Amino acid sequence: MKTLIICTLALTFLSIILIGCNPAGNSKTEPIGSGGISEKESRFENVKLNFIQVTDGIELVVPVTREINVGPCIIESTLISLLNGVTDMEKNEGYFTSIPAETELLSLEVQDGVAQCNFSRDIEPGGGSAWVMAIKTQITKTLRQFDEVDAVKIMVESRREDVLQP
Image: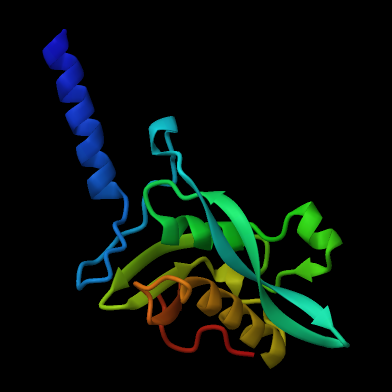
Protein backbone atom coordinates (compact mmCIF):
# COMPACT_ATOMS: atom_id res chain seq x y z
CA MET A 1 0.00 0.00 0.00
CA LYS A 2 2.83 2.37 0.90
CA THR A 3 4.54 1.62 -2.43
CA LEU A 4 1.30 2.34 -4.30
CA ILE A 5 0.97 5.76 -2.60
CA ILE A 6 4.59 6.65 -3.36
CA CYS A 7 4.19 5.57 -7.02
CA THR A 8 0.98 7.58 -7.34
CA LEU A 9 2.62 10.69 -5.90
CA ALA A 10 5.66 10.26 -8.16
CA LEU A 11 3.46 9.88 -11.26
CA THR A 12 1.39 12.91 -10.27
CA PHE A 13 4.52 15.02 -9.79
CA LEU A 14 5.98 13.81 -13.08
CA SER A 15 2.77 14.56 -14.98
CA ILE A 16 2.66 18.09 -13.53
CA ILE A 17 6.20 18.68 -14.72
CA LEU A 18 5.54 17.25 -18.19
CA ILE A 19 2.14 18.88 -18.75
CA GLY A 20 2.61 22.21 -17.04
CA CYS A 21 4.99 24.94 -18.03
CA ASN A 22 8.05 26.19 -16.26
CA PRO A 23 8.71 29.77 -17.38
CA ALA A 24 12.44 29.73 -16.76
CA GLY A 25 13.27 32.24 -19.47
CA ASN A 26 15.78 29.97 -21.15
CA SER A 27 15.66 28.24 -24.51
CA LYS A 28 13.24 25.57 -23.34
CA THR A 29 9.74 25.34 -24.76
CA GLU A 30 6.87 25.44 -22.30
CA PRO A 31 3.65 23.87 -23.62
CA ILE A 32 0.26 24.90 -22.38
CA GLY A 33 -0.92 22.86 -19.41
CA SER A 34 -4.03 20.78 -19.07
CA GLY A 35 -5.97 23.65 -17.50
CA GLY A 36 -6.91 21.57 -14.46
CA ILE A 37 -5.60 22.84 -11.15
CA SER A 38 -5.62 20.62 -8.11
CA GLU A 39 -5.70 21.89 -4.55
CA LYS A 40 -2.02 21.02 -4.16
CA GLU A 41 -1.20 23.26 -7.14
CA SER A 42 -3.25 26.21 -5.87
CA ARG A 43 -1.12 29.29 -5.52
CA PHE A 44 -2.47 32.81 -5.75
CA GLU A 45 -0.48 35.79 -6.99
CA ASN A 46 -1.20 39.32 -8.13
CA VAL A 47 -0.76 39.83 -11.86
CA LYS A 48 -1.55 42.67 -14.22
CA LEU A 49 -4.25 42.15 -16.82
CA ASN A 50 -4.50 44.87 -19.45
CA PHE A 51 -7.98 46.10 -20.24
CA ILE A 52 -9.46 49.14 -21.96
CA GLN A 53 -10.60 52.24 -20.09
CA VAL A 54 -11.90 55.49 -21.54
CA THR A 55 -10.09 58.51 -20.11
CA ASP A 56 -10.98 62.00 -21.36
CA GLY A 57 -12.73 60.44 -24.35
CA ILE A 58 -9.69 58.35 -25.32
CA GLU A 59 -9.58 54.56 -25.07
CA LEU A 60 -6.41 53.46 -23.31
CA VAL A 61 -5.02 50.00 -22.57
CA VAL A 62 -4.28 50.04 -18.85
CA PRO A 63 -3.15 47.41 -16.34
CA VAL A 64 -5.55 46.14 -13.70
CA THR A 65 -4.09 44.19 -10.80
CA ARG A 66 -5.94 40.99 -10.06
CA GLU A 67 -5.19 38.07 -7.76
CA ILE A 68 -5.39 34.79 -9.69
CA ASN A 69 -4.73 31.12 -9.07
CA VAL A 70 -1.52 30.66 -11.07
CA GLY A 71 -1.57 26.85 -11.08
CA PRO A 72 1.44 25.18 -12.65
CA CYS A 73 2.15 28.08 -15.06
CA ILE A 74 1.67 31.73 -14.15
CA ILE A 75 1.98 32.91 -17.76
CA GLU A 76 -0.74 30.57 -19.03
CA SER A 77 -3.03 31.33 -16.08
CA THR A 78 -2.58 35.07 -16.60
CA LEU A 79 -3.42 34.86 -20.31
CA ILE A 80 -6.50 32.74 -19.60
CA SER A 81 -7.61 35.28 -16.99
CA LEU A 82 -7.25 38.03 -19.61
CA LEU A 83 -9.40 36.02 -22.03
CA ASN A 84 -12.05 35.58 -19.34
CA GLY A 85 -12.58 39.35 -19.43
CA VAL A 86 -13.40 41.89 -16.79
CA THR A 87 -15.11 41.14 -13.50
CA ASP A 88 -18.33 42.91 -12.54
CA MET A 89 -16.34 45.17 -10.20
CA GLU A 90 -13.88 46.08 -12.97
CA LYS A 91 -16.79 46.70 -15.35
CA ASN A 92 -18.33 49.06 -12.78
CA GLU A 93 -15.00 50.91 -12.65
CA GLY A 94 -15.20 51.49 -16.41
CA TYR A 95 -12.93 48.74 -17.73
CA PHE A 96 -13.78 46.55 -20.71
CA THR A 97 -12.00 44.26 -23.14
CA SER A 98 -11.69 44.22 -26.90
CA ILE A 99 -11.03 40.49 -26.94
CA PRO A 100 -14.18 38.60 -28.02
CA ALA A 101 -15.64 36.53 -25.17
CA GLU A 102 -15.64 33.28 -27.17
CA THR A 103 -11.85 33.38 -27.69
CA GLU A 104 -9.98 30.29 -26.47
CA LEU A 105 -6.28 29.76 -25.92
CA LEU A 106 -5.31 26.70 -27.96
CA SER A 107 -1.62 26.65 -27.07
CA LEU A 108 1.12 28.74 -25.53
CA GLU A 109 4.86 28.29 -25.82
CA VAL A 110 7.61 30.51 -24.47
CA GLN A 111 10.91 29.90 -26.18
CA ASP A 112 13.99 32.14 -26.22
CA GLY A 113 11.94 35.01 -24.80
CA VAL A 114 9.16 34.77 -27.40
CA ALA A 115 5.65 33.88 -26.29
CA GLN A 116 3.81 32.17 -29.14
CA CYS A 117 0.09 32.27 -28.46
CA ASN A 118 -2.30 30.23 -30.56
CA PHE A 119 -5.94 31.32 -30.28
CA SER A 120 -9.23 30.09 -31.67
CA ARG A 121 -10.54 31.97 -34.71
CA ASP A 122 -13.00 33.75 -32.40
CA ILE A 123 -10.24 36.27 -31.60
CA GLU A 124 -10.56 37.79 -35.07
CA PRO A 125 -13.38 40.29 -34.59
CA GLY A 126 -13.66 41.49 -38.17
CA GLY A 127 -13.65 45.06 -36.87
CA GLY A 128 -11.50 48.05 -37.65
CA SER A 129 -7.80 48.64 -37.10
CA ALA A 130 -8.31 50.29 -33.68
CA TRP A 131 -10.10 47.20 -32.40
CA VAL A 132 -7.43 44.86 -33.74
CA MET A 133 -4.66 47.01 -32.27
CA ALA A 134 -6.42 47.02 -28.89
CA ILE A 135 -6.57 43.20 -28.88
CA LYS A 136 -2.88 42.90 -29.77
CA THR A 137 -1.91 45.49 -27.17
CA GLN A 138 -3.95 43.86 -24.40
CA ILE A 139 -2.29 40.50 -25.02
CA THR A 140 1.22 41.86 -25.53
CA LYS A 141 1.24 44.17 -22.49
CA THR A 142 -0.20 41.44 -20.28
CA LEU A 143 2.47 38.91 -21.28
CA ARG A 144 5.40 41.35 -21.30
CA GLN A 145 5.07 41.82 -17.53
CA PHE A 146 6.98 38.56 -17.17
CA ASP A 147 10.77 38.63 -17.38
CA GLU A 148 10.65 35.46 -19.48
CA VAL A 149 8.73 37.24 -22.27
CA ASP A 150 10.49 39.75 -24.51
CA ALA A 151 8.19 39.45 -27.52
CA VAL A 152 4.76 38.07 -28.36
CA LYS A 153 3.65 36.31 -31.55
CA ILE A 154 -0.05 35.80 -32.07
CA MET A 155 -1.41 32.91 -34.13
CA VAL A 156 -4.97 32.00 -35.02
CA GLU A 157 -5.68 28.27 -35.35
CA SER A 158 -1.92 27.74 -35.96
CA ARG A 159 -1.92 30.33 -38.78
CA ARG A 160 0.84 32.92 -38.43
CA GLU A 161 0.31 35.06 -41.51
CA ASP A 162 -2.40 37.70 -41.88
CA VAL A 163 -3.85 37.24 -38.41
CA LEU A 164 -5.72 40.01 -36.63
CA GLN A 165 -5.99 42.21 -39.69
CA PRO A 166 -8.65 44.93 -39.88
